[in-house]
Figure 1 (cartoon, rainbow, N blue to C red):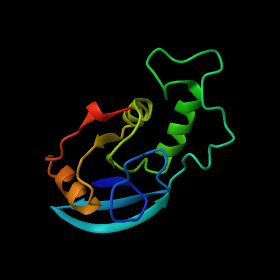
Figure 2: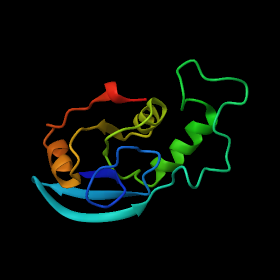
Figure 3: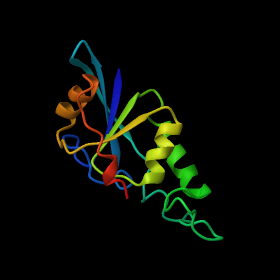
Figure 4: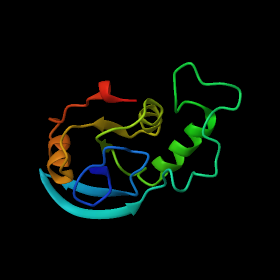
Length: 134
């Protein structure tokens, strides 16, 4: 199983999915971490020149569901298309739904350490705090 975590420092899970500069990818089998990899993640810095809102008004579901945002989220998901789970400590509802549509299970966790959270997720023990979506 491959689990991605957004990170600013390579050790802790970022509190903001959109702003994190990279993913840490852990390959876990038999309850052990077999491989660790860092991948660049597109984010606010790369999308700065793109439209941030639907030009004809907000989507009734809220921020992050307009076509431009969905396109950005799809590009962010492409880098981790081989992962089954995405760990974050905060993200928008639009990004959360985009990851699900890409076949990646997002988990909003309160566990900061990447390795501890990934091992718990692999065991099916990590709580998804979807109530924290913004």
